[in-house]
Length: 293
Length: 345
Picture 1: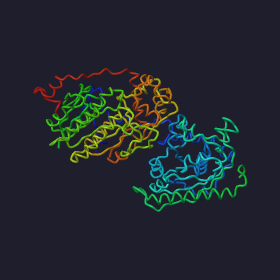
Picture 2 (picture 1 turned 90 degrees about the vertical axis):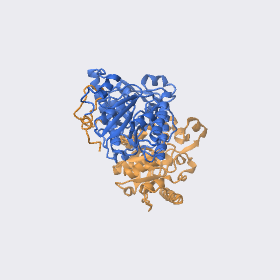
Picture 3 (picture 1 turned 45 degrees about the vertical axis):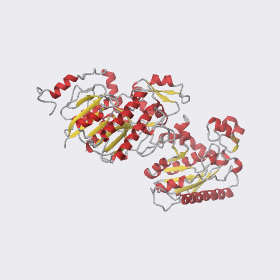
């Protein structure tokens, strides 16, 4: 094996312009020169800690977030968290990530469209705070090989761009890609039902022409924008957030198959969608006030 | 059994280093270097043959010398080092001639080792976080160096399929940093100011110079066939690389790439580096590690190895080149009956 063999013998050339100094172990035993704690996903726990410190008042004072069944999320091992998605600039993602990291002390990687990566500054901040582009290979690596928690919103922009009149009516769950990934990675899907996000930033009107011109997935006019002007872009209304973690859904199929039955995938995906839809309706039946829960 | 090895690009940095490394292995009986210029480092016992850049005489050389292994280091992985046209000639036509010679009827060649680059994966927003050896590109080829490398890649794949009797090893190296090699990245990092794209801080994976030589030697000696990513452990944000190297980042506008073209010239920013400074690239290295190779340096270690030698050079000045290749002198040492020691010991 070559790796242990010294390449330079006793004949070291003093005249060589490119000396082979492989035997002399001049690298490797030096102290680690890393300065930051950015991991291979671009996530930095230090950045996240700072972001959590800043977000904590919003989480607990503004939204007054309440969880139910948080203990159903495992303390270790991979799991795919699946939630309903709402609000023009959705607050459900940061609330879920913040809550789990705060209560369970383990990181959550948020999967989203790779469009975010192309936006200067936002893309970098997104990656530093745990954002990962939603590619099957990425999800597999996170869930199967690194035993992490990944959060995905199968509705995608169909959920966040829907108007206020359609609130709490879950959109199609894509083509069930999240189920296939969970099957391949051999991890459970843990559905999380969220209420409050719809009222935090309701979409009044959509301007598809403007969106096309700007190259954005959608361009909403929100109630926040009408009420607060430009400040409304970053200010959600203080709706009360309630989250309910549903029991993990296991698929009794072997991991790492080349392909899984498409009908089975669609069936499971629809099943999870209806579980979430039912929970959302159930939680809304108990809700007396949008603002006070 | 004594091996007979032909090394391409013997006059280049990598060819020279590989020949020097092979010379220390006594099982490499015959070492033959091919190059378009003259070697810049002294060879102990390797013979040097001068050829044109597309290696049109490759067929005759292989037949005449009956080499069993070809180590193809002459692949350009940096578009600012040669003109566009030459890039295609070297990477594509050169590889084609090499494979044609190796695959000719009655060829003695049993193993081909190629030094390629992770540039074949490209760098785009839609990329997965980590490329496995068989992960396809997600973006179309956008610059000449990637086009040439992808094309050469295809030639090698076809060759391996058509010639099951010849083992083909392709190593795709990540960006190399080290004490001696000069690349656009190392040139930028050596200056007081270094370009970045505003709002982007990509993760980069490096491999240390010596690990490149060791990896090529590892597969040449062991004869392991296959396609492998070679990159050190860990990834660093570009901003952190700059900080370790003590250079200040100058953010260039992320919009209108046309406008940064003069700056691109000022900063030594070839197109493949402009993409890399936006989205970075990560590759999976488990397959190569499974062949028994261990790295000496991590990605961060490669950056450190580079900056430490740069600091030394800054404080001592560059050593003058102490070796000039003289054809007659080299021939004398190798073939004169008066020479009694040294060359063949």
